[in-house]
Image 1 (cartoon, one colour):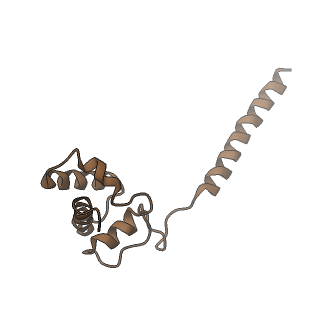
Image 2 (tube, rainbow, N blue to C red):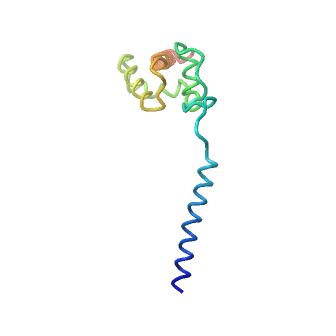
Image 3 (cartoon, rainbow, N blue to C red):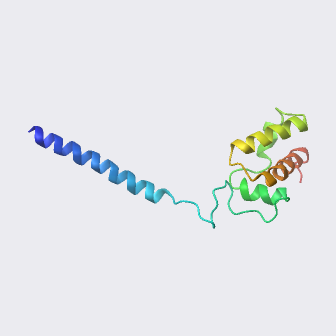
Length: 115
C-alpha cells in the first residue's frame, strides 16, 4: 500500500515538471536580432528622433498622453525630465543615446498635447 502512494506521488511530481516544461516552451522564445528585448519592438531608424524611438520602444504599451497625468505631479520641466529619465532607466531602458530624445519627445507631448 505504501509503495503505491510513493509511486503516485512520484508520478504527480513528474507530471508537474512535464506540464511546466510544455507551458514555458510554448510561452515564448529568446529574443533574436529580429525581435530585440525592448518594450515596443524593432530598433528605431534614428537615435535622435524621439517620436520614432518612443514608438519603437514604448508605443506598444503607452502613448504620449499617458504621461500627462503623471506630469501634473512634476510641473517643473527640469524635474519632470529627470523623473522621466529615471522611469525610462528602470522600465525597459533604451540605449543612452536614445533616452534624451525619448524624454524630449514626451516633454513636448506633455507641453503641447495637440501635437
